[in-house]
Length: 208
Image (cartoon, rainbow, N blue to C red; front, side, top):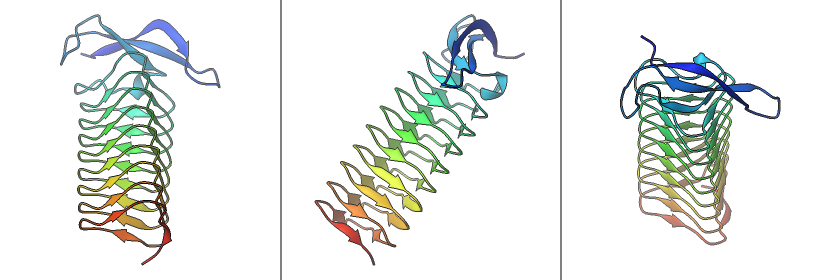
């Protein structure tokens, strides 16, 4: 038996005028009661009928994006493009996920964070505040990305690393172990930040 269906209530999902339909639970599961209404989808391919995944509040999932397994989309979050959200991942508040982004594990994306391009987020990663992540960025482990951070290109942040404040990182940079990039730092050109190294202030254009 399917766990939800589409109601007759719809809204305009984007500037192109796509109709998004509110979902209604057909049975009780997880913390959802039969008959409970949820967020909005363009069609039934946006939210799996399997697992405990659900779209809450006024969150929207459309285009070819898909939410599956036990993932949660809540608040006014917007999932579009060909994004994939699965495992126990959570996207909430006003976060936006688009393009070919994949979010898995127990990763949590919230506040006004925006992920685009081919970004991959997994494990226990947290991305929040006004952070923007794009390109081929990979975030894994227990990494935390927050503030007004910009991560672009081939960047990998992993382990217990932190990138925060107004830091900008792009072009082949790895931040790992307990490394931290903060302040107004700008890193590129094959720079590696590892162990307990902290890069802060106005440090810019550092290369190995």
